[in-house]
Structure formats: C-alpha cells, structure tokens
Image (cartoon, rainbow, N blue to C red):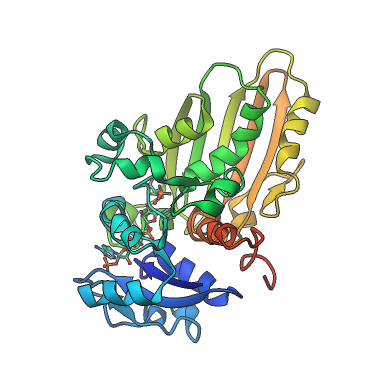
Length: 336
Ligand SMILES: NC(=O)C1=CN([C@@H]2O[C@H](COP(=O)(O)OP(=O)(O)OC[C@H]3O[C@@H](n4cnc5c(N)ncnc54)[C@H](OP(=O)(O)O)[C@@H]3O)[C@@H](O)[C@H]2O)C=CC1
Ligand SMILES: CC(=O)N[C@@H](CCC(=O)OP(=O)(O)O)C(=O)O
C-alpha cells in the first residue's frame, strides 16, 4: 500500500514517516507540508538528523498538482495536521476514495456542540462525525478494519481508555467521576515555536483545568464521567497518568485482575503487575504499560505511553495494519 503523509514535518508526521519507511508492506509515496511552509523543498532528514540516511524525502507543498499526484499515486492518506486543517482536508481525500487516517481530533467527537465548546470552532463536516471510526486499536479493531475515515484516538485518551475500559466493561466503577492526573512531555505540544513550550519556560504545571478537549473524548468513549487534568512536564516524550478510581462496594482484587485479563493477550499492551509504569519504560516504545494497586474500594491505576508512538503515529500504523488484515504489531515490534 502506498501511504502519503500530510504534515510530515511535524512531530507525529515525522514519526509516522519513520515507521512507514521500515514497514514490510508499505511504501512512503509522499511527504507534504502546507503550500506556504517554510520547510517546503527541505528533506525530512534536514529537520530530523536522527533519520539521516532513512528519511531522504523532500517535503512537498500541498498544491493542486500535489492533490492530483496523491489521487493518482496513493492508497492511504495520513493527516498529521491541526484539527481544523484535517477537517478541511479529509473530505477531499475521501472523495478520491482514499482511506484517511486522521491523527488530529477533527473527527473524534460525536457532537458539533462539543467542537464549539472544546475546540473553539464550528465543525464544517458534521455528517462525517457519524461515519468516522474511533481509532482506539485494541477496542475497535473490527470497525477500524472496514473504515474509510479513521479518527486515530488522542494521546491522553489512549492511555486513559486502555486503563479504564476493562474496569468499565466489567461493571466495577462506582458512579463517582474517575480522576485522571496526566503528565505529558513537550513533543505533545507540536513542533512549531510557542512560548508555552519554550525550553526555559517548561517546568511542571497543570493546564486545561475542566476544559481540555480530551475530557469529552475520554468520557464519550468510556461512558463514564471523568475529571481529567493534564500537566506539561520538562521532558521530550511520553505520557504518564495516575488514575484514581472509586470501585463499587465489595469489588475484590481478583475481580479487578480478571477485568484486566481482557488485555493480557494484546501484543502492544503490557500489564506490569507489581512494577510501576514510567516514562523511561515507554519512551520510544509502541506499548501501553499498565499497573494498579487496590485498597478496599479505592484503586489507583498507573498507565504510560509514548505520546508520539502509541499516542499518535504508532497507533495510526496499528490502524493501518488492521485495515490490511495484518497483526497489530507489524512494523512496530521486532522485524515486523
Ligand atoms: N504531538 C503529539 O504528541 C500528538 C499530536 N497529535 C495530533 O496530530 C496532529 C499533528 O500534531 P503534531 O505533529 O504535534 O503537530 P506539528 O505542529 O508538529 O506539525 C504540524 C504539521 O502540519 C503541517 N501543516 C500545517 N498546516 C498545514 C496545511 N494547511 N496543509 C498541510 N500541512 C500543514 C506543518 O507544516 P507547515 O506548518 O510547515 O506547513 C507540520 O508539518 C495534531 O492534530 C495533533 O493534535 C495526536 C496525538 C499526539
Ligand atoms: C503537551 C500538549 O500540549 N499536549 C496536547 C495534546 C497532544 C495532542 O496533540 O493531542 P491529540 O492527541 O488530541 O491530537 C494538548 O494538550 O493539546
């Protein structure tokens, strides 16, 4: 399959390019940036010297001739662009009958009202919200395999949902909101310059209190209320979430362990038992690491992912694998 990446100069786009190029059954058919991009014409490896010798791909401006070339040459289009840009671009590629993998939040929520409230824009293609399949690979694999538009799950939601869905499905959550405290590395904020993610400014601080766009995404997919607070930490990549769960009365530790057995055979999920997940354990890895401890009705779940891999490019590749009938981990673990 031939894959093009729109927004290839960004952190998630470049990560995805580096995965596609090593995948045994994919060809990287083009790397695109905006028509006005300061990076157009540069090689991806000029921007990311760690990929020297691997990503010698020119960054092409997304012009009308580029759209025609994509129509002719590509099977899959990956949008590694801002939400609003993705909302504009996806219908164009869907009309060309391409499969579209959108890494933004542009098609993840069901309601246009939530776009206005949490994203600050009115969705221009609300009918596609019902058509888009949520790309949380372990939980939605059958629908992803058949979908034309995949809304790859958000980074914080990927960690939270893998940690909480087993408990929710087993009916173990009490009615109180689940409290999610999350810390992300700075690549989560994207590559372009901005004071908030400047080296000298970042320490450790919460943001998006009560109104982060991942709150409705997690609640919608979990079917349970959450109180989600992200923090920005002074490291490059990785997300760690400490999640406080009130269990229903008399839920035993065996019931909790049984609930997580649902994930035990998943190749990209690691249940760590009595080891504690950490950023170090997942940085540059495609896995979700999960562990928990229980005291009576209180459960603390710790979950960690790499925001650019399982939280973005890795999960996008996992979704591509599913549409091709390949195992989840092809191109992500070992020789594929
Ligand atoms: N970083 C992360 O950890 C994660 C990011 N995501 C999502 O993925 C998307 C990309 O994020 P990230 O990689 O961090 O973003 P970056 O800001 O690092 O990259 C954005 C990319 O989009 C390009 N771009 C901007 N405007 C256009 C346009 N009109 N047409 C084509 N290309 C354009 C940029 O290049 P240029 O401006 O030079 O044209 C750049 O290549 C976002 O929606 C984000 O929410 C999802 C999960 C995790
Ligand atoms: C540290 C940081 O700024 N993180 C971003 C989330 C990462 C991202 O781009 O979000 P999606 O997974 O929804 O695409 C934020 O809080 O908006």
